Length: 306
Image (cartoon, rainbow, N blue to C red; front, side, top):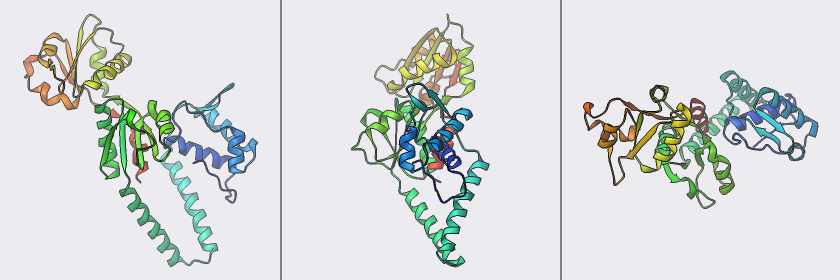
């Protein structure tokens, strides 16, 4: 939620810039999302319309937002706060809180007690969060699950992307950026954050080196990954040749046939055991294609549970 403090010595427009950047970095607003109208946000925050316009204008100059006639201000892309910015913003928050507590007449020991109590309650709340991950295909969801489980220390549940609606009870829902807006429209209870994924550059380089007359073999763990991964690989590498694909959990496993007919075989981590069981003489070239979240997405998920 975008917030400002009219009692803070920091100018309102600067508070707005910092608050909006934080909301975007946290995944509350995703790329292509439309920001609140300037007059509506000004009324909600009880500040000047020109102050909101000034903050939006600064974010446009930074490349965080863009403006188009008839569409208002939209998010260009995710942004992350640097360590120095996070420390500076955190110091302001702590300083303001300490000033208010001192003004109430609390002494140092009482302030220290309250700070420790709130930190303990926050830790307890973080450990108790219910986390759900969903994606267009299960292997992508599993990659996000690994990150979320590590960062949160909680058990994480995978759900079908289309199954997430208002009936799903969760504290945090992680979905691909492309599904963020639709998921928010179906579930207003949870803290919904988007993530982006990519593949190891070494794997993509191997595919990029193929000629269009050559054949690429793709082996996945689950059948639902074949379509989206094939499209993404073509988009990222420019490969226009034939792709032969199969999943090791399907009923018609033809891994050995694909291996023999392909100039290069790429496989996901989940399919590695089956692929390597064929032996080194079964393929001309073999590369594991890791599905991994981008560093900024990993950092955004980590911040959810700090």
